[in-house]
Every structure is written in structure tokens, then in C-alpha cells.
Amino acid sequence: MTRRFTSEIINEIGPEKDIPAPDVGTDGRVMAWIFDTYSMNKGHSVLGVVTGKPLTIGGSLGREEATARGALYCVREAVRKRQMSLQGTTVAVQGFGNVGSFLAKFLAEDGATVVAVSDSSSGLHNRTDRRSGGDCAQARDGLPRRVQRRRVDLERGAPLARVRRSRRRARSNR
Image 1 (cartoon, helix red, strand yellow):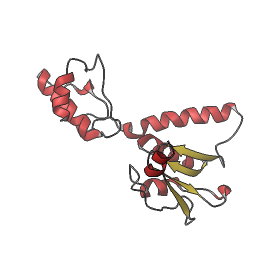
Image 2: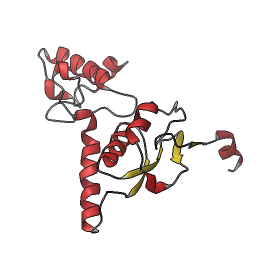
Image 3: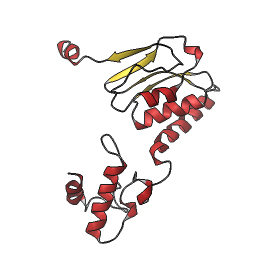
């Protein structure tokens, strides 16, 4: 399907036009298919047609976490302008896909305490003392994308609450 779609939009994309990037439901493999299909149609390798390709075919090291790093720089600057410190600041991350999960990890590495994470289908929050520190990397490892999320610890063994939206309840409230 990806290859057919690429063939249909081939005149709309390219290094000097629109450069597709991975998003929800896509990854480096899908970007490689787009790159390959585009290149086959052009008759030569066109590395600049997409971003997010695997390293083995010309992708960039650090691409997967690049957007989260940019968000981290913005957060650092905002905190600095308010004459605050990330050290000990409590943080909730809404959106725990690629960007949110890396951002939570980076914020924790900078000393922030990640007390909650969520995505479109569920969320986790730490019920314990917010000042005791969080281990976001553990949450990232234990929370696979699209939240087939197990009860995982944000704070070295602390209990977590799992929040799941009920579609039936949402429909009945309309």
C-alpha cells in the first residue's frame, strides 16, 4: 500500500518539494519503502526524498529523538527565563509516543520528576510523594507504544494508577 501511495504522490514529493517524515503509524521501514519506490521511479538513488530512514540507507543518527531534543531546549529556555530550575520540577507529559517518551526521559535526566505520562488511550500517574523522584526511563521501557501499558513503576517500586478512558461511558455522556 505504501509503495502504491508513493507512486500516486510522486509528483508532489521530493528533495526540493515536500519531504515526508515518519508520523503516527509509520517508522523507518515505511520511510525506506517510500525512498526506494521514489528512487526506482527516478532511476537513481534520491536520499533527500524522505527523512526518518534507517541509518543503513542514509538515515541520520539521532533522528528518532531529535524532535524531543528540540522540545527539551524550549523547556530549558522557558524554565531559565522564569528563573527556575528543572531540578526537582514536577512534570506531566501528555502524549507518550516517540516525542513524548523521549522528552520525558530527557527531562528526568535533567533532574525533573516525571509524575504522569499519557497518550490517547491511557495514562499513568504516580500516587506517591511527588518529591521523591521519578524514573522515566523505566516507564518508557515498560510502556510499549499505543499503551498496551503494564502497571509499571515511575518511582522505584511505587504503585501506579492506571487511567483508561471508557468509550461506553464517553458515549453515554453525550
